[in-house]
Image 1 (cartoon, one colour):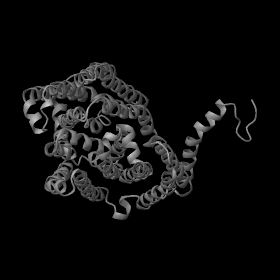
Image 2 (tube, helix red, strand yellow; image 1 turned 30 degrees about the vertical axis):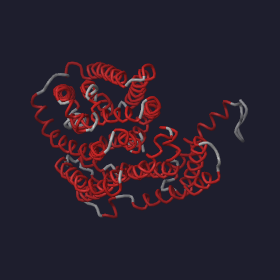
Image 3 (tube, helix red, strand yellow; image 1 turned 180 degrees about the horizontal axis):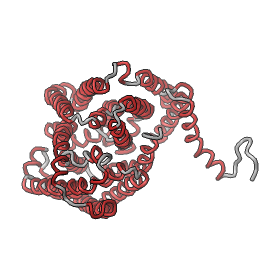
Image 4 (cartoon, helix red, strand yellow; image 1 turned 45 degrees about the vertical axis):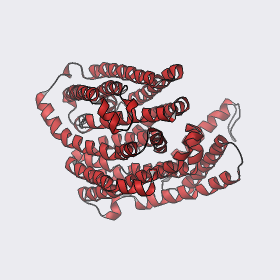
Length: 502
């Protein structure tokens, strides 16, 4: 708990505000834009997300590997990363400017042409600022990283949404996005200059070592980004923009899943890397098992809870215009369970970049082979099903490799009993929630609130009495849950039983 989840929770507390802000963006845009305009917005940021993952070529993420053990030369690694990001970002900007008409034809949307150069500018400055939270996490400045995540996400939401509310035009949203990226880049320069001072200079020998690790890792990342986003491009190619908007809403990225898994994985990798340096594989295994167990206790109820309230949630967030997105969202939600298996983090700690490449090639190949059949057989849901199937198969492949790296048996590889327990109590907690939903006749938001509250309370009670936690963890959970209640009671002047008057 002290090594992994306390720092991770600090990071997640900051990103919790960003979680709210991230949800506000599509909620506003879906109400201001038509389906065609909303679909265009989704396509623009699909392009950005694809290139953002590819263009880093593993340089930024490789800092998690080098900085913990090469702290004295950290300035050289960071400067080399910034220079590489500037070069690649500029190439992407020029390429997008020259190829904007081709990209628009590929995505079956001529309206993209006028906005693609702004995506290139946004990408350039976001690449240049990607190192900031990484350095903070490696240096264990978790509170600073938490604040940065929170402030950055809130500012991003404000600069996305405010221009749209004023002018109801996608052009102004893109201007706001570029302005945000420039401000974030400025903050990054100030931070890294303060942290590394005169050591912030290019270093040729370090660059060769850095690229030696980063390029294979970046190639693995390129293939990973391709396989993650291929289903979106396939739907965009086969269907019109309005249909793509429905599909994109169904594939709603729940920010909580992303920043929970990312924050936990980053901290896990730093701690694992230290144990690998000490050649303590037993400690590495214990970190892995404890991380997976705790993530399961969060991800399982989150997935089951989203399945219960899927219809009410989609309609509340995006209006009844996107009601057709609900079945897609329900299938998409199941895929979130795999995010709790942080296999890539373990493989990166052991520098298994070649295996990551092979794994991602397999994943991409499976999607390419199956995507046409699934789309023509199952329609829009088929695009999600093919992604779910390919992800399950590649996770099994990754676990097989980790089993051999750690030298453990299949029974020791995962906390099987704890995972089964987490799934069981998450499923059992749905019973009272479904009963409440069945008998309650009320507007959608009230049904969502009552069903969600019932499920949360049911899961909490089952977790305390049946969950795979030791007594200390249960005490910590109960204290965390009871603390807001006690604060509210004191604020209202109500004393707890047995509390002495002041």
